[in-house]
Length: 248
Image (cartoon, rainbow, N blue to C red; front, side, top):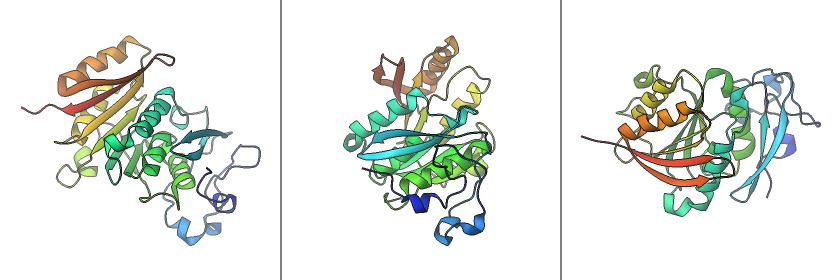
């Protein structure tokens, strides 16, 4: 019931947390074990402070390094709701060895839970988020998951075919949580969801509905995806939808 790396192993990761739960600049890569160094591709952003937040899913205590200095370094309400759904429906979803891509993975909680439940996960986000994302993934999945999650840059709507060629990649699930809020990239987000979806791909999208633009995006989502409301969480105003791409 604990995180998968020992404290000694965790101290070798870039941006390792100090005893008070805060983190400083990344450490010297030369001090990292070769087995871990080969996995480190991204350096955590040097925020003024980090905190450790604790979660419990799939029989594991998950420790996430977060910072309020970035939207992408905080676990938002829809992420915990999606984790709860994955845990409660893991057999129904057949997550063991399933190929999953998470859009806007942030600090990585959803990808960690999916990995613990047996999936082959690719966690994606913007470049400045990837260092902390990879740190959290390694800390919580190394030596305790069948498949070590991969971290990749994904800028919505940009270079999709180049970086995620449809002929070479097929995902069983595309996961997204709290990716819809008051920003100017909603059309590019929908385009990205469509690009990553093929026949058989299921999009699981959880979102806290805050603004009218959230419902406008839902209307557009329904135009291109056959959509089912899977769950509602009234205490957090989170809704979870299942979408499969419409085919002519």
